[in-house]
Amino acid sequence: MYVGMMCTAKKCGIRFQPPAIVLIYESEIKGKIRQRIMPVRNFSKFSDCTRAAEQLKNNPRHKSYLEQVSLRQLEKLFSFLRGYLSGQSLAETMEQIQRETTIDPEEDLNKLDDKELAKRKSIMDELFEKNQKKKDDPNFVYDIEVEFRTINSPVAGTQSQPMSSDTNHSKHASGQQNIRVRVSR
Image 1 (tube, one colour):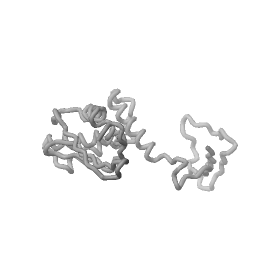
Image 2: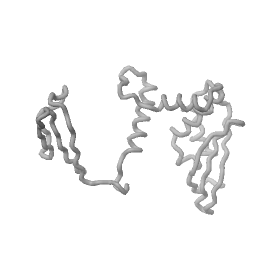
Image 3: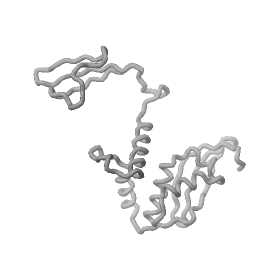
Image 4: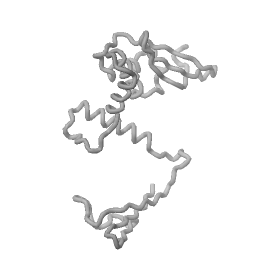
């Protein structure tokens, strides 16, 4: 396969013995489904998964194949390999990865060091991209009206008056306040 050839990644996985990243892709020129095995060398249970993923993704031999594979997915695969090399079961490794890739809304991000903060921001960015509705999506709505229910007491730092003429307030007998916001893009 020469460098200018385009391919579409279908699946990406890890093989433990001998360690390798396995990519199933479709060749756009011939339309054939192919498999590429990329050996993982010099990786131990003490290795940095982020660094290993970056090195593999930037390797000139594999770069064109891995363009459509996210760095986050490669990091997860290397985390599975590191767990295997550490003697963890697959379930334990999956649980650990789930803990590392889940954002706790109660966590104080101000107390994290720069590396951990960058990791959390990356996870939030990925989640935002995944959940973002784009104009091409079938359930995209251009003009959305959302109704929020709040308790009678205002939250600290918020304004009691609406900022836009598209915001309507109404009070219920229960003391709750409905706020209706119209969002146009």
